[in-house]
Length: 90
Image 1: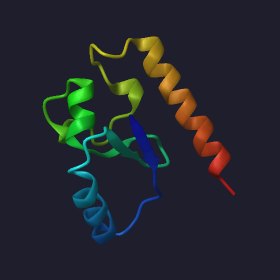
Image 2: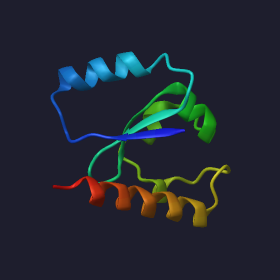
Image 3: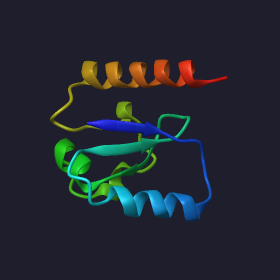
Image 4: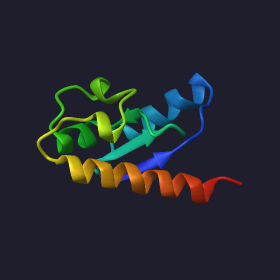
């Protein structure tokens, strides 16, 4: 499972990235600087057991209520993502 962190970009770039990632077999998600999902490919949604990829958009790991991740694991993911982002900041 991979997660990319991208600043908000133009819709054209986002559209191109989404089209490119849609067919990857490995689970990939893109989150914004607020750790909200902006995109997840179908493999990522399947991994989480989410029926529609679109239902992840705008959610954080803390918002997810999926069987695969218990609350402590969701908090761990959220904390690790925040650490990664803080290390990327100039």
